[in-house]
Length: 229
Image (cartoon, rainbow, N blue to C red):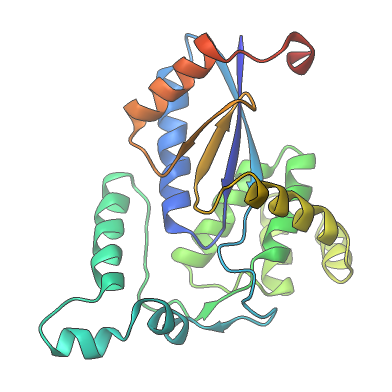
């Protein structure tokens, strides 16, 4: 028996890295019960970010309010509170979030294109993790073609081919259509996990909750025989 998971997520979403880590734990918990296959699906939290990106601090201040102004009044900003919670969750899950010092908030369309190509070469998870680490830990601009090419090469993809593809519009429309479909389905937040194309869970649930989600999908929403074949 196989459970097919479509993980809808963005590469600048810290909850998505946390969700992937917990999904891996859930898959390990249920490994003796059934197989689980994961496909990564694109979602841009903010497709209006320009291709060159925007300064991270300016972007977060516009989204959550100025940190300095709120903390000067004795109150932590919403982003400060969320960041501290994420860093604590990350430490517990061995995820090295380093929010302080991120220079740019990139547009992630090209990163999703790279991830799509990587999945076609059975390198999807490697690239997904490399993109998360590049952005949240190493503070690299994952909207930059040279950075994406370096990441591709680091996991064994053909650097020259990836550079050529990024220089054109290969799969741009495909990625945008796929993302639009998820929005039409009512998805507005990530991570979202769709099991066997029939049932969904949203958010970075804990490992046991995600394991139960996988079990329920296996028992109550099995893949059609043709889909498994």
